Length: 351
Image (cartoon, rainbow, N blue to C red):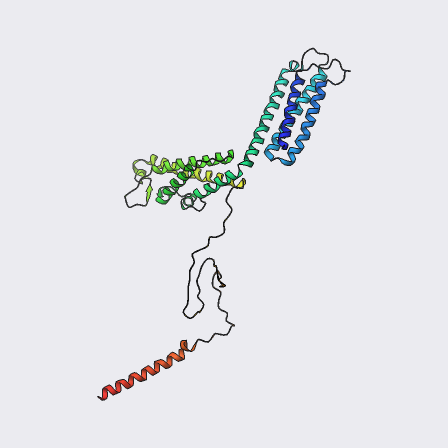
């Protein structure tokens, strides 16, 4: 059994003891032993404190805070009962009748603290079991609204929204459709609230963009009609303000969702670069071939390297060119051709 469960059992037991204490009569006299109800309440609170130490060692901060609040409420109720016993000994009225305000206040405080602990413990258990589901959902959200999306980068520049390129309109609509099409919700309430906030503001941005116009059929953008500045300046200003305001809200909601997913550890980890296309280059004389690429991969005993080419080593001796690629060889061939041409021309003139 988990420490949260044992603490909950101890809290429920102390709640029952405190209720019986409120229904008990005060001590018969100042010299009488401590009433049984007082002793039982103190024992129950001490037991609850011991269980609290276990929760503090294992539970998350929200659950620990809820457990500490419950212990404090039980301790305050036990102390209030003790004070009523000591101040009203030999009274024939029950403690709850001697001070009905204290009875109501402390009883409600213990009950509310107990409910708060149950909610916090349930959320912790749900978050543990739903980690895989929420991580998968977060991956789909990051794919639907990638941080390097062109439309998101355009919006993040926060320029005046007089003209809206078509790629922004299409990108916002596609992101909204992808978020809505994924019908699986986040289990974590904070994540789900942030996701819903982004979806709603994207829908508002789509509505605002739909209120703009295409100037002609060849334009690759929509715009707030510039003639409104003359004919209806108030409408023009309000339309621009509405577009800018919704855009800023979209950016804020996106940042909020990304930060919540990051705090939960649900953001996808950076991936290694995918293997690029294979290029096979063969030189006729088996000489080295240089190919510029962002990264390199070699197989079958070959060698490859990525990055800018290294400058040639000036200290290394130059490799002599083969005889058939030498400048001297081809110079001699050229000279022989010239001589042969002259001889042919001489005999042709002689005839």
